[in-house]
Image 1 (cartoon, rainbow, N blue to C red):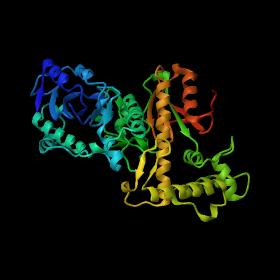
Image 2: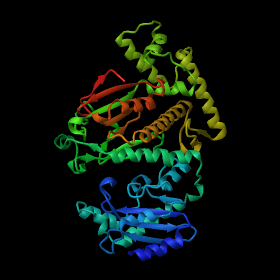
Image 3: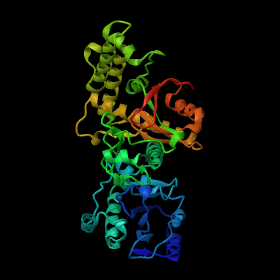
Image 4: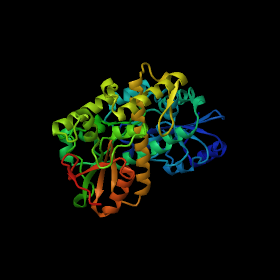
Length: 450
């Protein structure tokens, strides 16, 4: 193990190792705050094939401090396997970063564990948890011990790494898109926020969410600091603190898909709903054998449809063409799953192996496929939107399954709205509802005029 504290030491190491793949484990100065408000303390590097390991010191009481700009000299044409790529991209935004947990996830549907703290880390956290930049005073030897444990855990699954198209989509398109949303942050009204949440989460009037894609179903969760950003409660005021960073020139804007899962299923089974008719109205005509539904029947139509999606299709509904096709598709993928030992996700073709699940049945498998399709399509849509809207000021700040929340700058005008609508709706295939408001709680529906 070599400790690198000077530019000359770093240059010597780089010259010897730049032609090999690296494993990178960064340690951030604070670690408990969002990475977008943090800085790097040390970076552990293990060079594959050379079996060499070093620790570069950027900010620690036991060593001299390198310039963070040295990160830009890391190899660009070799694989850099990093522990939590999404965080590290804040400091090194390069295309050859590969998330260690993604390798594990493709192998067994779980990420690398996050339980590598040494007793020393636990001691310092317990007794000096409020100390700013705590990791800069925890002994370097303990950071090395923790980093080596993470590195070894990754090496246990390294042989299963395959950089196929599916892996590339998840590692690049998906993680990079979510990282961009995270770094945009959510601007808050300080007084409102501290009524509902812990005020230490606020950094310069921003709070930050953190997406986790390593879930059983593949559908991202989004939590940070005790806040579940994917389930902010509108009724109890949890959404009220989130306001626009653009002041009088801004407002909150949301696009919400209409009957999203039903429409996704229709695409999966190649079924076309009629244009300009609500899906719930359309299916309700079959349920109630009438063309016009009362408000109560419309609500009941929604309930019946979702029961079929998530609980298995009842035999009395198999005469409805849409559900007959879903039943046929369910049996098809279930048979493939049993015979092949895996099934591939609809868009990115990630393999879901039998070994990933302790209990599985046909209805549950359909639900997994549906949630995978939802996530993969959303990631592709978000990726395209982010590419096409780089020149605009407005920020996509929250994605929650069938809803997309923008901190909108009025000065961006209708041009931005056209782009978002075009990407989300795909020529009307997935219609959206639009709401605007001064904060995330007080939103009202608007008729689209663009």
